[in-house]
Length: 211
Image 1 (spheres, rainbow, N blue to C red):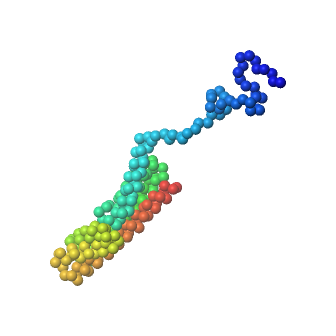
Image 2: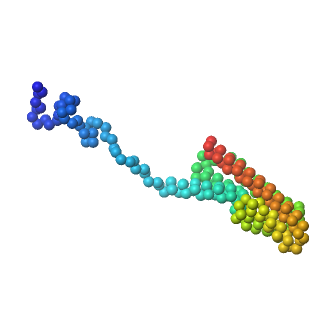
Image 3: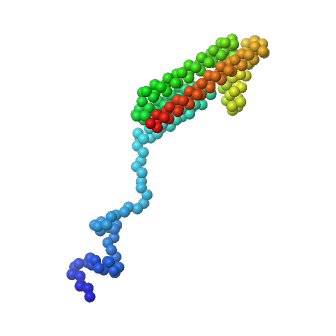
């Protein structure tokens, strides 16, 4: 037989809990001596204003870099300056922890070289064959119009534009075709150089962020 509980003591005896006669202490109640587990999904803290601003700046930098890569082909966009601006913005938001002054100087020097080669290639190609200003304007307009016709338009647009521009200046068809071809070759060479340098800039940017 079990000894009766003392008067006024309503707590169950340990042996009663062990053999399953009475329920044990409820872990949800304070003072039960058992760890309390909280149920339900964890609530993430709301984003601060500074965090939202940082995300917006990173998105702006990504748009600048992507737009700059497109600008290496499209003459209406300053491709290389946009790429460098996006890279510099990422460096500033990151506190220059990954992209320091040395990285920015190297990437900036590459960008300056790309802009210079693009300008020299186009100017020398047109000057060497004696292209008129109308041929240069025609090549530029032809490039803009050609972008709406995918890759063939981008390739043939400058040539057709330069040809029509030279024809409008009163030059013969044969001479205009020669000028159009020379202008097209100069623009194509400058575009290829810009494209290679742009990808080098983005590649160095990615390498610096990984290190």
